Length: 182
Image (tube, rainbow, N blue to C red):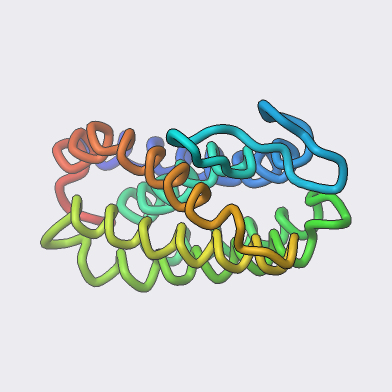
């Protein structure tokens, strides 16, 4: 893929990454198979496991941040994390502001720290390992700060892991289209 296409893909991933943040915050209070008063809206992610519905977009966001870094480089990726943290704090419902911003910022930094050294030699491992660690941090911090409970932690981890696993074919394609990171 010529450099111009890689940059365009990087900017599309950047925009997608930023758009998923407010969507996840909105979904957690408005979309789900059940929305009990005072609790997050939940969706089933595996037999017997429920997770707050924002889980559906957060796993994708972790992978999109990796695509931004692959196509545009580490600095645009860090800018995306900073802007995403600001967006998360600015657009999250009042009850979720601190939880959303803190979880987003910490999980994306973990993702960045793990992905960066691995991506040149083992892109698939970099994406999977960084996303799994990032989604675990995101889930723990968000649930604890937002709801004071880790009851949905297994569901959060499984739900986000599904999104990461579904991204594997796209990451393989990315490796062919952008063989060396920016």
